[in-house]
Length: 194
Image 1: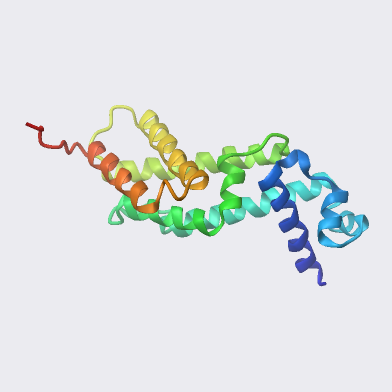
Image 2 (image 1 turned 45 degrees about the vertical axis):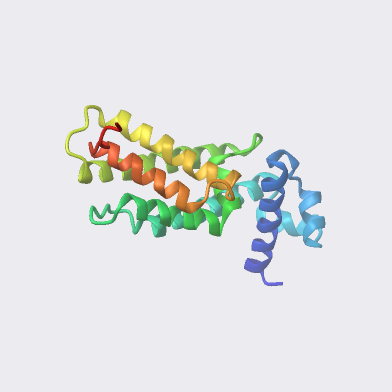
């Protein structure tokens, strides 16, 4: 098997173990057995367990970033795109690659420090995107940083709900809630009930 394909095979096996059991369950022997290869192949590709885990984190960071980029329509905020459509795009990316998103939204213990560094950077990038989206759509927000953090927490929870119980938290149900939240943020209040 050519080097790049072997590398992907190893990282796919590693990701499956991380997704099912956590980072602590990954070791060179186990991944070698899952791939039907010898330990030296992993050492040739990654230098060892740490290198393999960092390569996995880097690959999954790229995949999640690509999914976010495609789901949001790019890094620049387009105020003509509804929040519902942005969230729908991100949820489509989540559904297409749930193991990647679980690694970042519900990380298991024992991950390499690089996981938490990439996670912190990704969260900062998402907050920057949300701040730009908020400024493009909202009139006056008393505390932009706090509002962005609250929206980010809600978005994270939407993704977690989708990952943990997709049959209960359907796309339609989640998007209806996004519509409701956006309408409240925009200051639209429902008519009083008699």
